[in-house]
Structures are given as C-alpha cells and as structure tokens.
Length: 204
Image (cartoon, rainbow, N blue to C red; front, side, top):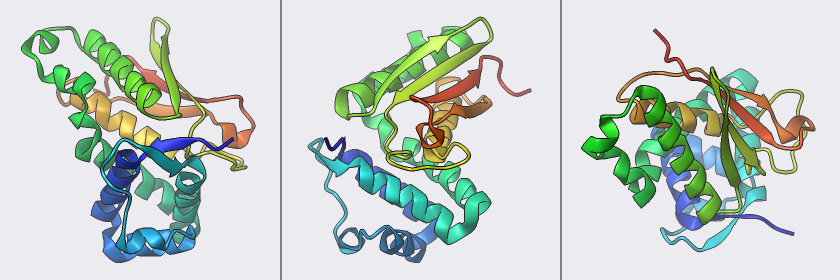
C-alpha cells in the first residue's frame, strides 16, 4: 500500500532544497533519485496526496550519495529548517502561534503547543502519522511512518530533514531559542517508528 505527502509539502521541500544547494544541486539530486520529471515541473501547491513516500525517501538517499553521509546530513538539516520557514508556517494551526496570548506562555508551554500543532498538521494532511509524548525533561516527537526513512535500510537514523524542521519549528515557537533535537530511533535501522528526542531546556 502506497503512502503519500500532499503536493504542497513536497513542493515546499524542493524549493527549500533549492534555496540551500542551488538549482544545479537540486537538479542533481532529482536526477540521482530518478525524479527528472520534477526538474522542470515540480508538484503543484494543492493538498492532494499524490507524492509517494518512496519518492521522498529516494531524494533523501540521493543527498547522501551526492554529498556523502556527513555532507548530506548537513544539507538535509539546512533544507529542513528552510522547509519550515518556507511552507509549514502557512497552516492555520501554526499561524496562531503568532498570537499575543500564545507569546505570553512559558517557553515550555509554547514548545509543547507548537509541537502538538505540528504533529496534527502532518497527521491530518499526510500519511505521516505523528504525535507528541513527554517526560519531565524531554519531549518525544513520534513519527510512524517517516517518508525520509521509507523502505530504507541504514546503520544510523536518516530523517535529517525532519530534525532540521523540528529545530527551526522550536526556534520559531520559542521566539529565537535553540533546542537540541536528536533522532534516537529510526525505521531505517529496524525500529518500529522514528523518535525525535528534544530537551525541554534550550541551549544556553
């Protein structure tokens, strides 16, 4: 059974990648992923779910193939941050974060509300089911399944675009603070789901 992102998610991700690595870099990634039809005609801006997770996974794998594991990770983190800034903030659940009442909350409450809103967007608009768990010191952003790890096998977690997106989302929700985000479980390494661990305390 195929799983899908909406067209807008994929389009915004591709535009974010172009912002980070340039037009030629993006074209090389799309060529390496076997998605040359998107070079001149990327997905449209509708919320129709037509972009298969398999395509997103191939793009993520092509980053490692073109830039190496460390270089690909760096590019993916930067693209994830740009993806958030470019597209996801347009959704109603996130636009409310700019409300003065939200800004009056504590940093922990702002990050909690922001992460829950982000999880709801992915769950409601795509086949990436996401939810938030927490302990006294940490949040756990759970994704099942992740399109970036879809049908991949790896020795280490590979969902770096989602790490970058979460970093930027937390910075935005907390009014400029930076948080440590680590993917501690990944379906590409054999885990049942992907887990992103977030310290509640911002980086000094």
